[in-house]
Amino acid sequence: MKPVELVPRSHLSLVHSSRQHWILLVATVVISGCGIFREYQPHDNNPLAWPSRACICVGISGETSSIPLIRDGGRLLRAVGDLAEVPAIISEGIIGREDVDLAAVIDQTLVGIGSTITAAINLPLFFVSWDQVDISNEAEAMNAALEYIETLQPSAWRNASNDDRDQLIPPGVRVEGDGKTLVWNFPDGERRVQAVQVSPLMRWFSPGNFAAWERSWGFVVPDKAIFEARRPSQRTRLILHEFLHQELQMRRWLRSWNLVYWPAYTTTFLQTGWQGHWAETDGRHAANAADRALRNWKRNE
Image (cartoon, rainbow, N blue to C red; front, side, top):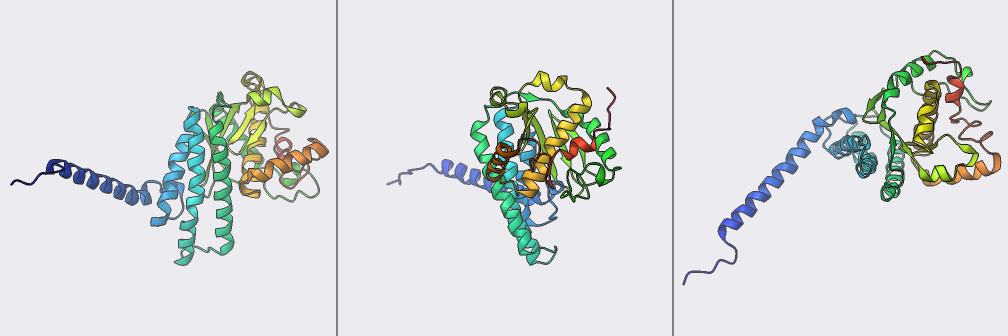
C-alpha cells in the first residue's frame, strides 16, 4: 500500500526553501549591519553594535518623516538604539578597545531606558500634535548663528553667577535640513533630530503665553502661522533655545528621564515663573543663554 503523505513533499520543499531564505536574509542583515550603519555608531566591526546601528539608522529616517505614526515610531526605534548600545559598550570595554568603565555603562543604560520609556509613552499619542511646521529652511541661518556663538566669550551668554559653562553648545556642531526637520550633527558622530509640531493642547492652555514647549524630540507651538510670522532672527533664537532644553537638559543632564524633567519643571514654575527658573533663566543649564548669545546677532531680514 502506498503511504499517505499528510503534507505533500513539494510543500515541505517550499517550506524548507522559504526557511533558508529567511535565514539568509537575517544573516545578511547581521553581517551588513557592521558596515552599512557605521556612520551612526563608533564601534567599528563590533558584531554587538549592529542592532544599535540598525535601530538608530532606521529610527532617524522615521523621525524625519512627515507621517505622524512613522515619525513617532522612528523616535521609539531611535530610543531603542540607545538601549541597544549598552552591550556594544560593555564588549568594547572587555576587549580593551575603548576606555570604558562602569560609570559609562550605567550612564548609557540610564539614557537608553529613559529615552525608550519617554518615546513609548509618546507613541500612542501620535495623533495629538498632527500638524508639523517646516523648519528645514532654517538650517543655513542656524549654522551662521552657531558660527557666531563660537566667536563669543562665555561671559556674553552666561545666565547667572552659578553658570560656569565654557561652551553653550559643543564647537563644530552644525545642522542640516531633512524633510521638515533639522538634524543636528555633533563632532563625535551623534545625530539628533529636532522637529516642530502644532499642539492643540498648548493653544488651549499656555501659562505665561509661552511661544513654545520643549519636547524630547523638538518642541511644540500653539499656532503654525504665528511661528512662521516671527522675524527670522526670532525663529533662530527660539529653535536654539528649545534645542538646549531637548539636548543639554533633557538628554545629557537628566539622561532622557522626562518623567523627572516635567515634574521638576512644573514645580519650579509654580514657585518662580519663567524668571528665576533653573531650566530657563537661572541655572547652569538654563536655555535662556541662547537668547543672550544671539541678542546682537541679526539675520538678513
